[in-house]
Length: 156
Image (cartoon, rainbow, N blue to C red; front, side, top):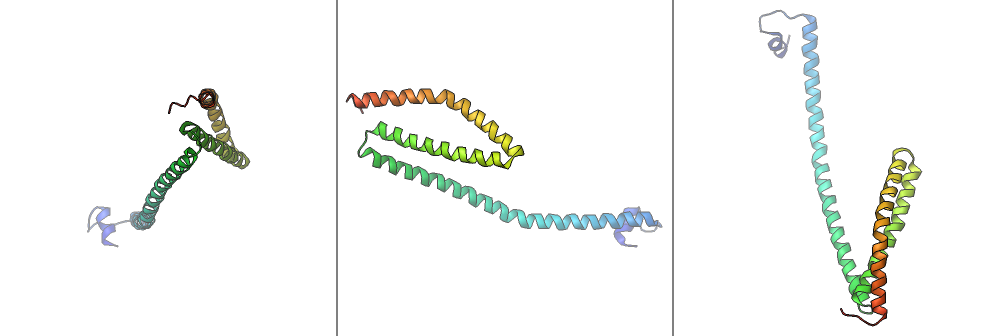
């Protein structure tokens, strides 16, 4: 009998039955397996955490890069358009791109069926509700700006 089994059974001099010995041996095997799984998880978790941190940092750099590119495009548009019209044009371009990419993504989710299709329907409902509130206000602002630009009252 092992020392660990003797200690768990209640003393070193006491006789241990086969059931108790089997239970102690199984418990020791389970403990060893849990230690091994924990070690393997830690080996995998560290690189995973580092990888996720690197991906998040890369995402932040991507956002900054897109922002810088957007500012550059806006400056280029401002060389031949009034500032507000250039801004409105660039914003409109981004919105069109978002709509096209969003529709493509929703089509992919619907094609997957099941939960993703339900998610696509929920997302479309939420976007439609928001757009029905935002689009009229945005259209009115663009109309006003175009009217002002067309009438020559450019007080920028």
